[in-house]
Image (cartoon, rainbow, N blue to C red; front, side, top):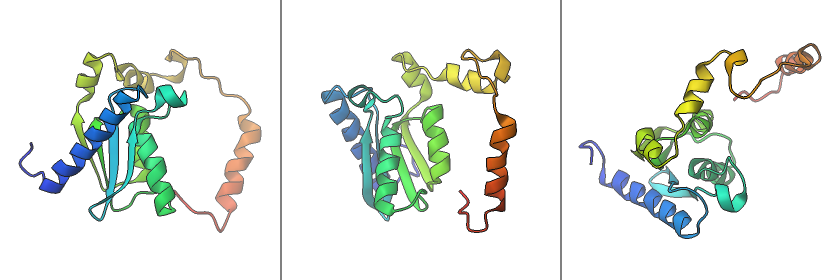
Length: 162
């Protein structure tokens, strides 16, 4: 283990690994698990549920974030740590940044995941391409009408920024 890791960090990572093991036993999805910790207490757990939920967004981190936010009655995870068995994919990384936890602690790397056919490299590559060069066509339509929604948001005095 890395020298600066605390005993608590090791304990919580073992819990994330246990979540992943549970998901594998249930044939729920890939070998991924996550826990979210606040004030040294696990407040949420998740394992990859893509197959059993038939939901491509049901990654371990997403499942744990949703549960933690429900428990905290908040859309952000201030003061929380997220432990995950693998470096988050682009989708999960985006959600994690929106949730704003204090730290992300991960075990396996994206290269480890690629070796077992969970390769997110193509998504990282797609994000960097110009819109007209992406594999899935992206077409802008209705901007003139939809931009009024942005103006309405901008004028709202009681909006909650996130």
